Length: 141
Image (cartoon, rainbow, N blue to C red; front, side, top):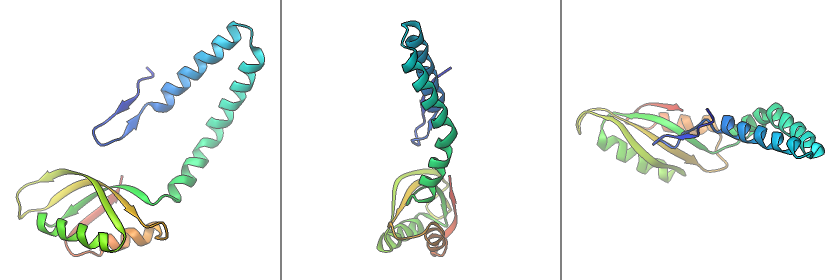
């Protein structure tokens, strides 16, 4: 309970639960030492954060230019070619982890971070990636 887990693919899990437990413990300590006004203001702040944080998260995700993606390529050579072409179009691919690769001539599936220029819209970025020769599929995680 309250454990923060970070996977090898930089995915964080349990952070909200752990932070909530620590905050609840601090509020309890404040009440225990008689600091009621601090406990009340902290509780009200916590309620506001839980109520509105989702809206802030959605706003940030919609205006972000960084995407975690799964990409499948026809083969390893096509993957290298596509990544090179995307760099020329201001789309950077980094943190590449090869998920599945049978042989040099068969399809390659990767998990990566894709970062586009700030002026490029999300649908435009994914359309440009899908149109590249050698790309079988692209999915945002």
